[in-house]
Length: 269
Image (cartoon, rainbow, N blue to C red; front, side, top):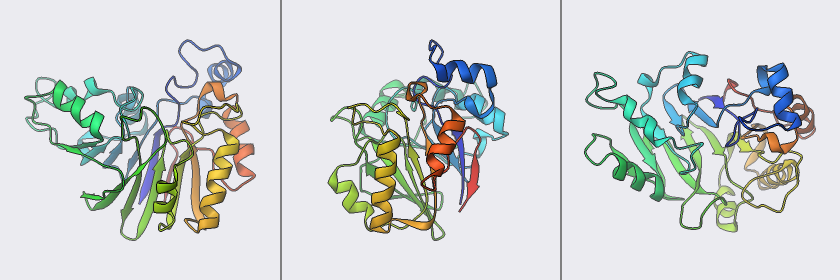
């Protein structure tokens, strides 16, 4: 299983369009891995995780074709993950296609919005529910309940399994409630991609992780046996408000054997 991080930024990206923080200024000056587009990833070049406003540019940058997608699986309906208007470009009159070539999977809010926006379009939309696995494209995907956003939305992290390998893609999660911890106690991960949105900025908000909470989550997963000694642990979803440049995150995360993710980072498990 190959995991390719297309975007590793928070909602506003890094540098933020209207942001003048130290991190944004640093990213504008130095570019490279300091620049972070909105968060998404792709597995084995075919399983797209979230379809946000930067996806077209990400695919172009990394030489990936959306025509290879077998499915788009959304984590939740926040605008940086769910650019609903982009879906139309998969079909006529924007292409010659009469079918999109991929199936859309999303929670209660995502699926309802797609059906309302495209009532007569030939999109196949499947509503996903936390802790209820489904099969697609040779993968077993089990949405895992995140602690983020409105209580009316079933915001999800994604446990993806194929050929004996497993990935937990956990962006926009916060510290999980106990049912999620209990569910994950039965998993053994080859890779964990985990948000660190707030970086060095410690806040009372519980819908995202700062660096201390990131370490606490990983440490608990290690004690549970869910994260093993050989599990690849990678960060994503970094905000410029987190007061951490890419190089600063490399140093901080390296202290507990985690990798600071960046746009275009690809690895295999």
